[in-house]
Length: 255
Length: 221
Image 1 (cartoon, rainbow over the protein chains, first blue to last red):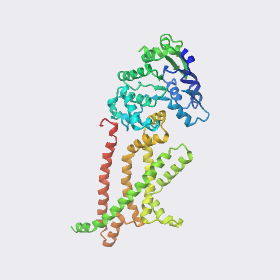
Image 2: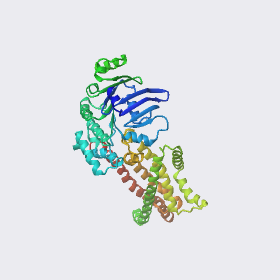
Image 3: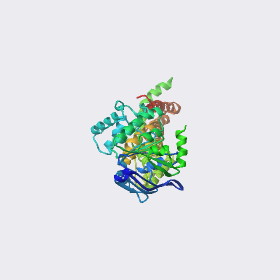
Image 4: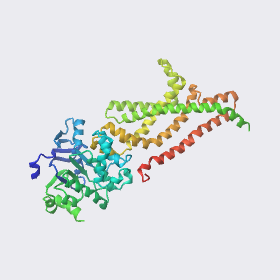
């Protein structure tokens, strides 16, 4: 990647591995993501994509290796301090497959809660920011509702607004449309597309091949605990280097 | 129909006893529930010693019958130099039982809060304490509330055990009327009805609460 050589990478993984006991999920992963880059990660299930994403913000602690995010570096396996992890997480927003909204809070409170408790914004400032973000994802009218009142696609857009409210430098998406109807997924993809065009750095674990091809700048293919391809999405999708990639693409595209 | 005039005669005395029973119930819950919540929270502490102490306290207090704890507090403690009035010993013992049993109910409630919401808090940088305070405890309490109310009904019934340490609660009053009039059947039946007059509506209330508490999870807002 040319871009990663020019600018300091926003996210950088060096020799990152994850084991659960004897079982290796992935080993020795090296990856750089430049500021403003949109990276899609695809691959068969069980390849370790989600675990890799969760290691970036230490929701899972890597077994070994080093992760740098927005200029903060944490080396795994040497008594990682909670304070360092918290500082690293503050730079990354995360969107989950199952939204993970707080069902006992209104939509507005879902977005404002962490702003008030973590960033110490006043309720007024937090709500103002929340409403602006909810407006951006097309849900300002739902501010007073509870999440259960909203469709899956709406809930996921609220979750995106909640993550953006913390002013992250990177957004991590863990299969954000996998729990949604294809049709409803589109509205979430539209929000993500807009986010990408605004210059947000994004890492997206996904099965949406169209999105990976049209919106992402780089594509990573993971299989069997390794990165087997990394480069231009169009090129990988049309002429993969690896037989494993070809097999996977035939399964997802050829149906 | 002489029992009706008897009942009218006895009612004021028994009603005083009922009020005392309710007072003991209230104090036991007021004291026991916060301790139960603390035990529930610290039972999942990362510190093994804290966890061990909590589990120990809960298991011992749950393992011992409430009647034994009651007798221990009233008749046992004076030999260590602590003398409690029968009223204090009564609600203190029942508060300990409440703490132990409700900590298990509350722990189940807290654990029922989806792990994904706790992960969401982590990624937002919310501290562990704030996560407990604003996300886990409010929802866990809601989930546990019907079971807690059910337990409150049981502890109300258990206040009758205070009869054994001479607290003049409902059963004691009934018993003393019985021993002076020998109309045990009649007076104990009235006492039973008075207990039921509290527990049956309370049970209905549990059912209503159960429905209400799950409302935010459906479309009714």
